[in-house]
Length: 320
Image 1 (cartoon, rainbow, N blue to C red):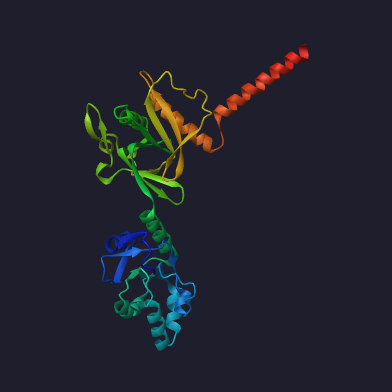
Image 2 (image 1 turned 60 degrees about the horizontal axis):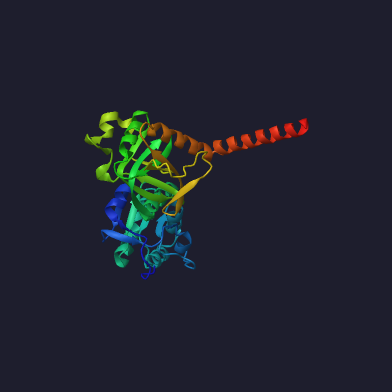
């Protein structure tokens, strides 16, 4: 493993064991650096083949690898294990709660390696470990706004302070939608282009309503009114009504905003007295979901008008 590379992240051993339900067989450190997000099952390496071996990855073995090792002559087995533990890998995990796992401790001590043991099946643990590493290494940012889930669509409501973001979110909750975050939205880019949004731990389930103060949405409206995190699929920008702004009347213009390199649909809603913002945002969310399914109401409307005008023009031409 090259020490000249910047680590993807630093893994806390205690947290790592707690989240993945691992037992420590040997560890001298409180944390370790991860330089590669991949996971390697070292079958070929335990057979003595190290060409193209990426020692920067977490190493994991199960029944197949252990069965092979136990089939070897004891002296050859010792050599293969020592050769492997001489490599500078981040950590070594033995799955299936295999009773022979202690054979690795001798060389873990000699070469200062970390060895864990899991009761879980190898493939099952790999999936969980990949998800854990993805969460740890994913790009992150925070934005000012309110996050709600509206009819299954994760919506960030943005706008100037005092424009009514929290009050609108509260009205959406009363309509049966879910509240996630107020004021600060933490965003993580996961699994390629998925943006997961959540509240900072200290602010979770709390909302500031001007004139009332801080309220606990979960306590007031029940557990069904909140969620801890949702994928972000849309941004609503509230702005004060400006009669000179060229607001899109048909909905043909499709704006996006960049969040962590992902283009997210953006809808600007002008705010004025008497407008039901909650109802408008519900409509925008449902319309966005319909667009994802290929149904574009505005375009269908314009196409129908064009067809009607063409039909009228043909009829006039025929009547001349």
